[in-house]
Image (cartoon, rainbow, N blue to C red; front, side, top):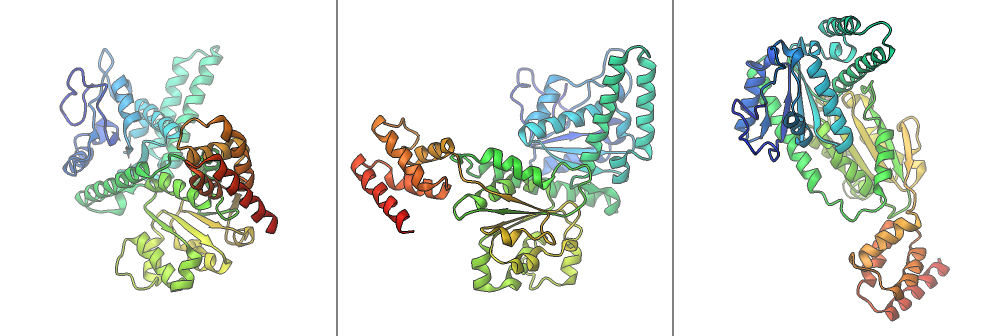
Length: 444
């Protein structure tokens, strides 16, 4: 198996080779033309790209007879981004279709590689719905399976049917992602350069997401999964604009959850914007200023003075990820993101607010999620991390810690604040502070 470019991976280095981008393509369609030009453009930007040569089974044969080696599969798993080049005859290759499934399996398990489709001289809807040459390819696959399997072999027939369904599902999923359509850009050289620039931008977002400090967060895993599920990112018909409201008490972690999700998902969108502290910013500058800021970031236009019809028409072609954080009035929500027609198909908008009444508006919002308090085990884990810095908890502090989390009532911000104030303090100081906390609660 060869590695990136036309040169083979040196012996003994296959197990350590890492790539930023994995290119998936049908060799006979694009390897020596479009894909080669794109690979060179990525290399020119110092993006390490896997463009491995194919490995044939004994006896030779066409692209359908290519088998994947372990280094090839590891390259997928270790890459940050997978660039899928859908060409006219892509679906005729069982190897390509199996590779696509493996890419999505890695994405589902590790959130990487991020998948970016390129529709090269093929209609995206043909990929999504298996029409045109893709319909013919699947007819050929099914005929081939029928010939290979005896009618009495029910098990193999079922396996083949499952494989075909999985291929179809993977194609539909890929075609619903934000990507590139060659028909939208006349010049191939411009298309190559635009894709290379976009990949560089997406890799920067992925790196920023990895750098974002998620250590020390407690109880966020299951909550993030629930919120992402409500966003319906994996929907087979991911063409609508979906708005989700996240609400809960002050300090419960709404903004933290929104930020983590934003960082994890941003590389899957054309444009992204995180509008923080909307309530305060509205009071300082007004909603018109915030709307202009939103459009400016989404369109990457520094000199945008106002969000007029021209800019809104441009935005309609972009799949956007937006967080509107700290909303306290439905008017803010309606003014900033109330018109879904402003945003491209597949856009996702997250709104955070303290009060459910602000986000529980079925005209504007598609669904809501209430951030619940941490349970006792989660609360103790978070409090311990701040009060003891990860060190073992002394026995004489165990009961005091339970009193502390009782006072914090499962609110992450309160737990962290109290833990930091009690860090390295004596039990006498703890007793005094917890008594003060108890008196404050009684007054309230």
